[in-house]
Length: 114
Image 1 (spheres, rainbow, N blue to C red):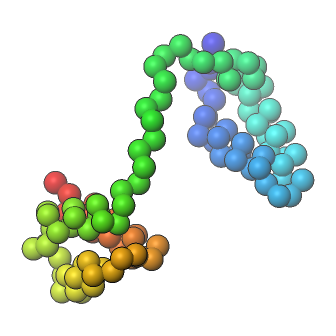
Image 2: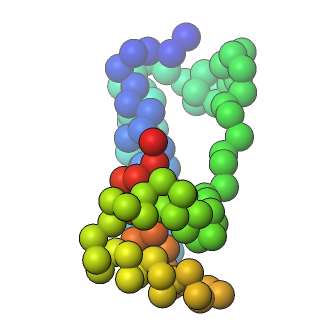
């Protein structure tokens, strides 16, 4: 049975470090994760066993730049600053967008989405 004292997000963050390129960091992460499990009064088989509940929902893929652009154009063209409107107009003509442009589109779409 799982203890309420186990911080699963922190455990997941620590376990991310097990994939480090640095052997010392991998070792420290494994030891820290084991200490967390012990402090919560649990065993690894209790952590790794299926919960019996429904499986987690599948991860959705991030929206494409075109989908974000369509959201901005559909819901928010009247709510954009002059710079944002020019930005959307220029991105609309491009085949590909940079990561920075994608991040701006995502921010705009999040702001105007109903």
